[in-house]
Amino acid sequence: MKKAYKKCLAYIHDNQKALTFHLPEDKHVHIGLPNPFIAPSSSEGIFEKDQFYWDSYFIILGLTETSQVDLAKGMVENFAYLFNKLGLIPSRNRYYSTVISQPPFLTSMIIEVFNKTKDKKWLYDMTKIAEKEINTYWMDTKKVHKVYKGLSRYYGSPGTHLSAEYESGWDVTSRFYERCMDFLPIDLNCLLYKYETDLSLIYKKLEDKIKSNTYAKNAQKRKKIMNTLMWNQKQGFFFDYNYTKRQQSEFLSLAGFYPLWCGLATKEQASAMKKQLPLFEYKGGLANTQKEDISKTFKQWDYPNGWPNQQWIVIKGLLRYGFKKDAERLIRKWLNMNKNVYEKTGFFWEKYNVVTADRGKDGRYPTQKGFGWTNAVFIKLLHAMES
Image (cartoon, rainbow, N blue to C red; front, top):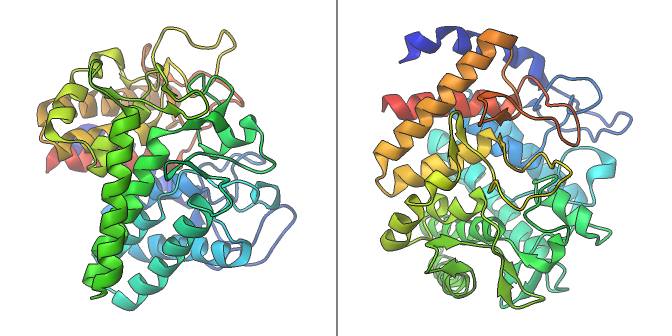
């Protein structure tokens, strides 16, 4: 397989230098970080010199796959530095971005690095940061994020629906009907479920049975509530929950597949969810949302755009539950689209129009080239296909 994508892999390798930055001191809008990192893009003024929160998880997947563990480790340590400095992990290392976070993937990053280094002292130090993050930010006692039956929402200071939507990473989408703070998002609560299961496993490894049992119980409690509020048996899918109206959303998006990725879904639920793939699947892969009933003003996290990070979440979830045939079909579509668009344009892109199998449709800003998580997901999917 690698031979067919040789030019793409060469591009990713050669492009990494342009995406790698080291800013040890504060400069203008940027917060200095102790370690080098990979930014999403080298495009000046938009993403240049930025270490984004959720982008970094997908980038780290590519780094650990290509034996660049020191760079991955340093990026995790940058987030520990930011949390200690700010009391949250901001969406990126810019001062005006410190009022919001992004989808929390810190424990997943920690585990990716630890699986390569086996450094228990480092594991303990980083886990303490993740533990503080979930308890003081995402599950805060002031009920800014944790708002209903122990589940959390996106918020984002100064407490507007738009700032919450930015914190969701889906900037912007029809998914929240421009009232993001009213919803308990399925993906956010899956990520917090994974934090709890990760913390349980980590503390078991660190021989702290009390904490391990506590987080295991917290995860099971969250799972039960999520199934009650977010699982739709009739449609065989998970949905966001509007806690202000006490009702499920009817909006279909790839966020509904996060229970597969984090292992929350039962085998029966997973089988039902697999049947929903045709609602999202097109020539180039998976569109991020349903096609119907979306905003007349185009929003870049909606159909027809497909995003690399979301492809990985769904495909990894399918593989986790044994749906190898479906996963391999989606991998081929995504890899071939990336390859064809690269041959046409000379670049990998932030997002793609999966309906036309071309570069992504512009939204809040022009579709960026580079691109950090696209490069990493390409590597991971190619490896998954070969393993």
